[in-house]
Image (cartoon, rainbow, N blue to C red; front, side, top):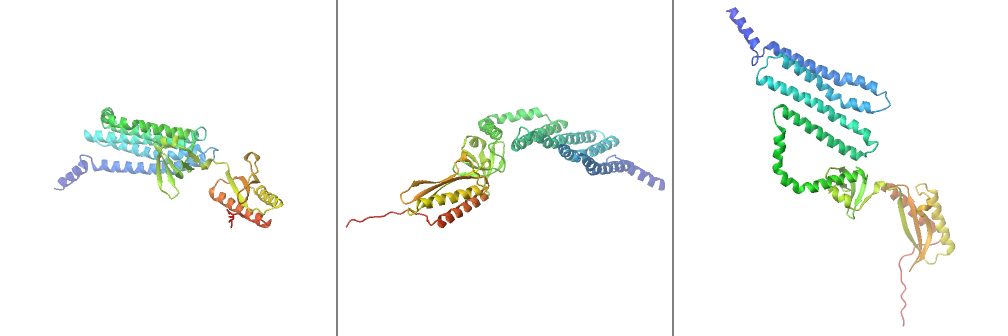
Length: 358
């Protein structure tokens, strides 16, 4: 009786789950736990130790590459642990095929995850030399799509899924796609043209035509997203932007002020000269109003108007930001009012004298 009981225990231990003994299951769990512990050590301790060495170098590229490899490195012990488990367990038939395919998929994922993570630090070398930040970001997204497309194709091939018939099957939609292909490529090439010409980048404040005015939020393959000042997004096809009259306020070197000040006709010549001199002194003594003769900075009597003597004020400010520019215009207005009042003149307003014949 007791011998039969121990025999039953032995058979249960050996049969385990689906013919896999309990000892083999415990061994597999142990290998998996060891792989997880090793993964944690590699991803944290080992990589952190190496990062302390690379942080002492002058370049930051090695730090970025090491950080991008942190997660893929952690997948290596998992893949190796699964390989040990698959080799140790007595798997046959479909189970052996499934385990092998899963292991292959994990290896493919690890390899292409490494490639995908390395794209960003490697493209940082190009963005500082001959590519703008927007072009580098665009190229990064394209490269990531290509890398994962190849990875998915290889994963499907592992399971015996033929990629060629799938691609050929897409030809059924060729006619429909061809109808919009011209516009798609037109927008894509227009986007490349915009980036290569460096017309604008993300964060630039631009005005398109007479109606659209906002901040560039994202430059896509086919269109550019511009966020209006009320935070509403507007998606503009790149082809339209390449042909449109576009003003990029972010590229301004200076802002121009062109004002006409109307003074009353009772103002004398000496008063006019003194008013012009005071305003010019203010412009010269304020550092944000650069004195550049090539830009025609001056304060002069312009003409004798219908109801006023007109002063012409033209100057340029180094402040490109709209807030600071508004503050400078306010300071200039206050100075003009002070100069006119101090010299005994006043501002004219449109008036007309009517003579009645009795």
